[in-house]
Image 1 (cartoon, rainbow, N blue to C red):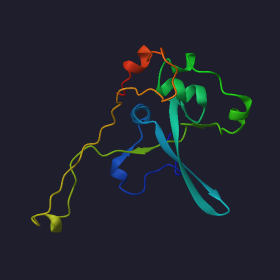
Image 2 (spheres, rainbow, N blue to C red):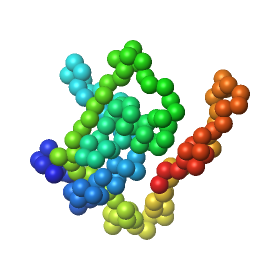
Image 3 (tube, one colour):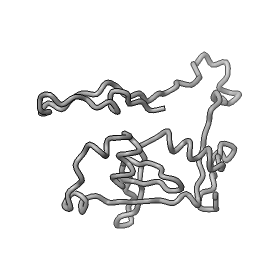
Image 4 (cartoon, one colour):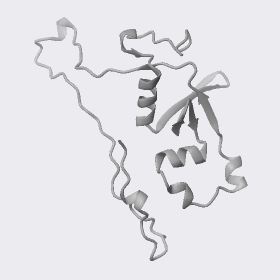
Length: 153
């Protein structure tokens, strides 16, 4: 699973190598950053992803749509050949994987204690709001049940 390529070097005590825990971390999210070199310069782009078994799919339309909004794929039209040609499809196996997780309070340096500066954690949450129809949606099209009940756990 973890290899020298995926070994956590900075704060290795926070390393997570248990595949079930890593899959759980992946299942919580849906945005990742893909990095690559172009003309010897790093390029990083944000993109949607979904885990499907032992693979992470980035921009693999059917997998990502169904993972993010179950039931949506049956309602929408299939992408055109032109749209598919403009969409890169990437699947990354989880054979070599690691993660870093921290779920405890910060560990301040001894010299930072007693300075009167607040320290702590600000919990962040991702919550879906109510569906908002497109301005050009034709009249009489109801919001599907899978969207009114949509939640991310």
